[in-house]
Amino acid sequence: MQRYKFHGDYRLRFVFAKRIANKLRKYKGWIIIPISISSERFLLRGFNQVEGLLLASNIRFCSALIKPVDRAYQSHKTKKERLQESQPFLLTEEARSKLCHKKILLVDDIYTTGRTLFHAYDAIKKACPKKVQTFTLAR
Image 1 (cartoon, rainbow, N blue to C red):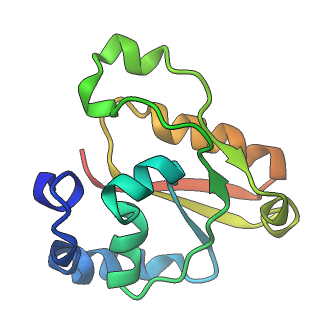
Image 2 (spheres, rainbow, N blue to C red):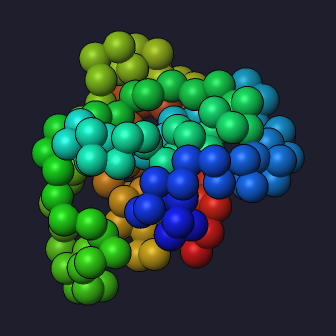
Image 3 (spheres, one colour):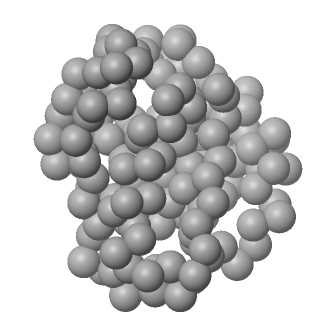
């Protein structure tokens, strides 16, 4: 995961593709939402690691979250610092009506404290989804 995410070895997304596709098969009819990264992080890395995993797995997704400000890497923070992090996500205007009364699956690559998924859920719940679940590749 470190080589894929932090060293830019984009080809490694295919290592996980079959397993992700098999796990997400049961979410037919759900709206899949990957955790977003800031535009600064995208320019630095060259790709969104979660979207890359979904694309390699042939999973359709909705980019409903925006992360307008780049912050320090979560992996460089202590648990206490992660838990004190303020809301980094905004919900796109297009997503507000699209997610209303729908089943949503939030997808992230790594679960450490759960704070990222908590913030993503907090942003998405404003759209009044029917149900929200999460999926992460690693913990």
